[in-house]
Amino acid sequence: MPINSKNNASPFFAPTTPRAIAQTPGGTRRSVKKEVEETKSTVSGATSNLINAIVGSGIVGIPFAIRQAGLVAGFFLVCLCAFLTEKSLRILVETAKHAGTSTYETAMEAAFGRFGFLFVTINMFIMSYGALVSYLMIIKDTLPYVFGISDLASRRAFLFLVSFFVIVPLSSQRDMANLAKTSRLSVMMDIVMVCLVAYLAPIGDSLEQVGGFFTLVKSSIIHGDTVFIGLGVLSFAFVCQHSAFIIAGSLENPTNARWSSVTMRALWVCAGLANLCGLSGYLGYQDETQGNILNNLNEDETLANVARGMLGMTMLFVYPMESFVARHVCVVALFSGRRAHEGEDAAILNRRDRRIGLTVALYILALVPALFFENVGNVLSVTGAISGSCLSYIGPGFVYLGIHGGEFLEIVDNIWNTHSNATNRETPEMKALNAVNVEDLSQAPSEKCSLTRRFLKGVIWYLIGMPIWHYIARVGASGYKSYQREKATKSPYISKLGNAKANNPPRRQLGSFGSLYPSDSNLSSYQQGNGPHITLIPPNSNRHPPQNISLVQSPMVEADLNATTEVFDYVVAIGFILFGIVALVAGIVSIFYESTH
Image (tube, rainbow, N blue to C red; front, side, top):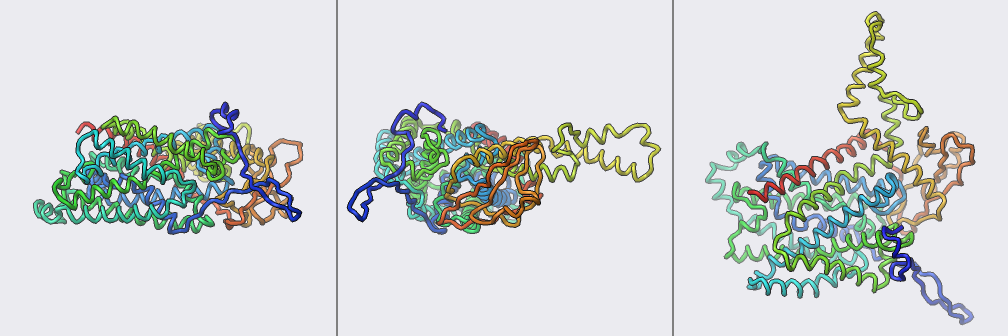
């Protein structure tokens, strides 16, 4: 349901079903339901949109990040952030398919309820709105100078005219696939801009002053005192998870393999551009490298102004990407009905008044501060750092650990013998510590070894923070069980991402969390048609289980096989959460460091 339930009374926000006039053979005209067909993009188009969403304006700060982290450390951190981003994009979409959801916020809601839904939607709006304001400010500070406009009033007028006649029409498109062509153009401009930075950077003279390339490498392997500042900048240069589901939903036949192809191609290109811009910029200016590498270029150099113009032009095409995200948040937060809650933007915004109204409202909200404020960078950077870390790293880890919480608890139980299903369970460290007494000294060597092993397991339990991960998984598994039970009472839902179908489903008993997979007695009823048939059996219940419900599969999307969870996947999910916390702290530190130096 929408965040503001009062909007239900307004026809503007009320759920609607698209209809068309059909004529029967007898000549009778009647109104019939008509499904909205969303425009889909190819793998190439989706890749261009994802690259455009990632690169944005952050690429001009990569040289500064390498300066803070160190030449060698910076290069590897760029590759690490690209790898983690690619992995998180695949984890998010694949886990959402497993849960039968099609948006980031509903995937989080499936495990953590209303709190998870609000956590994602609020952070998505903060992230996207901050980007909208910053993109308009970059346009105001770059493009007018290319045309010889320098006074403030003229730059404001220039921003309004260009944004109104270019940005608003692009942002008013209904489907993300319609932006594929402009995204390709934006990617080409990014490549030209990076190449101009590499060409104009005085790398030869700079290296000669320090005694050569290898001398610089030896002195700049890693800067331990400022490496986290560099990490804070780099970790948010690849933020795009808030737009991942919109891009994945726009992909024609979005199977896991096709989405993996999109993410792999996009991140390889982004990592290549980031390293080329970052390394060439740092090698050319070293300790003089500024937060925006374009500020290092000679203002009187024609090619330098061309590079600045390219950055401003790309903002015209990046803005609509973030506008789609902010508009999506408005749809799920303000509009009523199941379609709106599930994020079917094409169906809700098929009405032109809704689409244009939301687009223009968001444009005005972003334009006003961009016109009348010269520097809101610190506020936007802090909110971006918090929202970016929550959406890019912490969120994916929680989604995976929560939805797959039942399997995680089984793994933990097998290792630590926690007996998660028991009502009165005793944690392994308590068992180990309680078992150590004076009589243990006279026990046989094998028994002493067993006690030692149990004691070490108890110590490791705390060292790796297992009580936290155990609690998150337990809450997520309980919430996911409730979500599946509630879903079984609703009509089948066609996910635009497609659903996952069973592939030799394992038998798992979740004890206090109920049985999520069939036991031997009903294994034959577990069909492998258009998605898995799920039976939820509450523990200690004498009621008959609900009828098997089949997830409806869109005829345009091939069903993916349910991937089996591995221990490594949970390690990666926990690593995302930890990295997100570090990135959040590092990001805020880097912002205050840059503002005071």
